[in-house]
Length: 309
Image: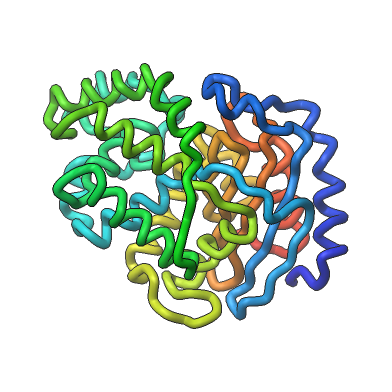
């Protein structure tokens, strides 16, 4: 089954909307406090380029942790899996995304996976370039290529807000530097990482990126290869096992699709061989996932039989 009309999708959004009252916007990043908790929107991009929308699907929000999937794809292409996974593991964790516990108890002391903050910092540390500017330019060009557009913006206010309050991420960075998982200047790394998280996008664009991963790395319209198929496969595997913070197991059981969330309220889904999904709903549950967005994706998965299991 597949979505046939925007009206059909709008009905699902309205069915999920009441859940926003049970969540709250992220408040530990000051700039995200300004989000409207009642927002809820979605876009679906099928692999033939057909699109459906509901809600304010062109409203921009920052990628936050969704950028971790894109950064992982980028460094796998640039550095190869052997180098990447010498610095970050492949195992899911039941701990919160910003926990330092496993770094202290693992041997070697490398992050368990690229979807937790420690792992994401290790991944961003592998961006190639002589300085911050070269590293950023290479990455932002990769994001632009996934979207098929010439310019992608980032929210300077959000990035600065995150940078100024990134005390725990600094701790993670210095801890990993002690064990030579991370090299170089931690402040420069955090500046690059917070810019990465502050890239602005809308539901339609997020669905496009999801569709690239769903289509084994190929653009859903032109069929141009944007990501090697094996890299797309690795990224989708991490989305299934680690993409929804420490609710990933429950999400896999109830929804059953590769997905990645961010604390701005975004969810990117990649239904293999079918479609990409972009959702925005900034009211979060206690795990940091969009509370109405989760319900909406589950409704869509049930209705259109998207579960890969």
